[in-house]
Image 1: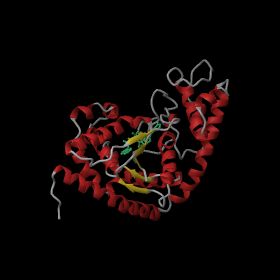
Image 2: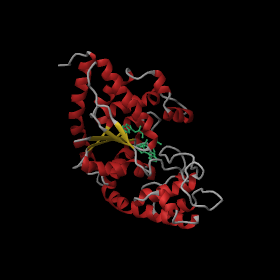
Image 3: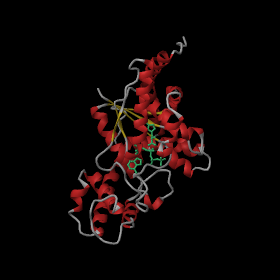
Image 4: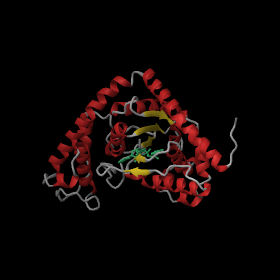
Length: 328
Ligand code: ATP
Ligand code: LTN
């Protein structure tokens, strides 16, 4: 079976961009692929985190992923820090990546420009991400558009590693980016992507926002003055973003939807209604799950054991290929 692997950081509250750009596809993949999903808590540490908040976010994000439809019986769901092979392969990937290629990563440039303290981990972050992916012999990586460059790097590293080893040790993965919803923008600053870690509460729709908050945020979304509904992300980023949100939430094409509106008001009202409808069942399931921390912990422990059995075999293969001796 084709293996699908992806990850998400517990670095803030899950938002509509995460759901439409990635999680929706993860939920589909668990029925058609051998699906493995990881809450990448070690990646979150590349920026400063309060330990109590990180703990709480890790549990609530896991509960929310299950509420979104991830079924621990149909996929493997685990925490990155529970499978030590991730950091062990990351070291070998750091020794495979060049300083120059890590320096060209746009996420590093953006995040380091905003960070007060630029950790070495923020710089080597994509090598750990490549390790996440390559440990599972991953074929496809469902992600939003912002991750394109990181997945390209994981491909390059796998190819370089194989060519140095003179054999196909690592599977070369491909990204899968949804046709609609791959880049949901901030509602207040439609030039920026909606993000967990940017402080923009009015521009970000959280998966756990109540219907009133969602309606208010969409109603106040920045558009432009000409009142012409057209899908043109360059010239009309705000309006196009609303069309993408409505399209991704209802499974329709944003350009086709544009033809059905001649003013912004009704488009905003329909987009708000579609989002409220999409999120209501997720919120109801989450409210039940989050109280049951025992179940969440047990899902994560079972997931880590399954993940580890695959990861340790890959790491042993990689160690052998570079000339490291087996430990026992
Ligand atoms: P941070 O702001 O901390 O980097 P994030 O909101 O970008 O967080 P991640 O944990 O980095 O979220 O990403 C999880 C998944 O969600 C990735 O596949 C990413 O591509 C996708 N994603 C994130 N933001 C968006 C967005 N605005 N539109 C579509 N997909 C997105
Ligand atoms: N870098 C990603 C999160 C991430 C990831 C992964 C995604 C870490 N490891 C492996 C796909 C596959 C992000 O910032 N969205």
